[in-house]
Image (cartoon, rainbow, N blue to C red; front, side):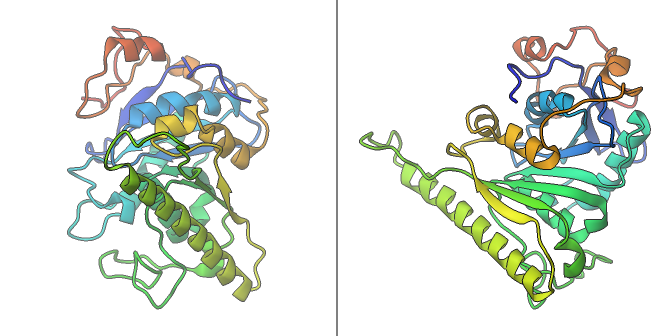
Length: 316
């Protein structure tokens, strides 16, 4: 089931009191699913948290899930795709721990095991976070990742799972992370028929897309092979979208990425009990624009944000 338009339910922006550098957008559904569902969507290098939140909130609403979209700024989290190694900014993995704890306190939905979605560099973060903290992840969806951490104990992280002093205290347990259900999405190969390339760089873009898809398939194969060696029955597979992957927006609107991701995680939409922490309870607050950007009036109108609404407590 596909929404006819992005959700107009309220999105709220929150800044962590414990660390004002860390913020996130939140959507709480008007009707909550019977079992607790918290979906965390991690942006790519464009850091378009507003686009993630607007496009995915409609699907979160249909599935009765709380949606959390953390913002990893370039200044503070330059290395977020690799969890945030020493000397390269703040630890993105630890920041996410605090974000979901804060979201759980605001909505009443457990964050013990999140459903994690990542696109591009966010997909790199998502699969690495799931491998590092399998006990915290119920399902992970990886879309358009450029690089992967292989389940190879001989290679140091981020190439493999051998521990690194740049992430103190982090250890990888294959027998645990291989049990986490994972779905990897790749786009269709370029097919321009008799059309002439519009830009000279087009062959390079096509090669990059093909390389990403090949790396994804190799990673899925390596994960499944590692599982077989341990005698595990894995739920890790790769799915090809019905269109090319150009951007997060086009992947959702043209290739059906969000619909496939949510139905992979939850099955067909079904709603149950009313949510005391729903968007209706939060609707008097309007998220601040994405840090470092201005929100145009047309964007505000499309998302149903009232012009004079206040930001969440702790927002700048």
